[in-house]
Length: 225
Length: 106
Image (cartoon, rainbow over all chains, first blue to last red; front, side, top):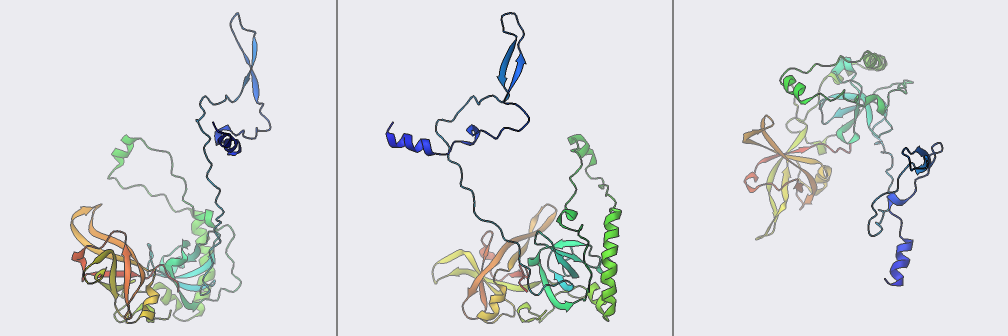
C-alpha cells in the first residue's frame, strides 16, 4: 500500500458507528456480570455496549452538512391584519375571508367568520390567496397566543385496527368525533370581535358571505382587487 | 347562482415547434383576454390544468387531469409556453385548458 493512501485514510472521517458517542452521565461503560458454573471466577467485567462485529473494508465518507437555512416567509405588503382575502383553492375556494395574523410557520391564520360564511379558524398558504383592498379595522384585537401552528396539528390516529376489523368496518359510515368544545369556544371569542367590526360597515357581512368567481369578460390580469 | 370559476380559460395551440421539428415537452397556450407580452407576465408561474374525460373510472371518477405550469411568454401577442407533468397528447390541440390563479402574487 503506498504512503499517500495510508496518509489519506488516516485523515478521512471515521465512519459513524465507530465514533464513540458521548457516554451518558449516569450509566457506566462496563458492568459486572455474575458468571455461574464451577470453573469460572464468579464475577466478570463486561462492556455494556458490545463492539460491532463487522467493520466495512474502507472508511465511508460522511455527507457534507448543508449550509442552506430557510428564511421565514415574507408576508406580502398587501396583506395586513383585517384584510379580506379570497381563497383560491381547497375546500373553501372562492370564499371571502378575514386575515388575522401570520403564524410562525409562515401560513396565514384566517377566519370566515364562521357564522357568516362557514369558514372556521384555519391556516392558509399565502400563495393560494388573493388580497383585496378591503380592510377591516380590527383595532386593538389580538389573537390568543395559544392559537399557533400546534393548535392545528391533527391528533395522532388512535391505535391500529386489525385487518379483520377494517374489513368488517368497510362500507359502514365512519363515526365522526364531535368537534371539541374548546375549539368551538375559541372560534366564538375570535368571531365576536370580528363580527363587531364587520357590522360597522354597511353590506360587509353580505360581502363576506358571498363567494367570488370570474365572469365572462373578466380577465384577472386586468382586474384590481 | 353567481359564477364559481376560479381559473382563466385557455386553449392549447400546439407543441413548441419549428417548421419541421416539434418539441413535445413544451406546449403553447393561448389565454383568453391576453393580447400582449406584458399582460402575459401576470400568468407566469400559474398552474395549468388540462382536464379531460375517459371511459374507465379511476378512484370513482371519469375525469382526469394533466397538471402543468405556465413557464414563459411566447412571442408578442400574449401566447404563453407551458410545461406539463406529462406531455400533452396531440389530440388535445384546440382543447380548453384551465389557467388557475395560484400561486398568486397579488
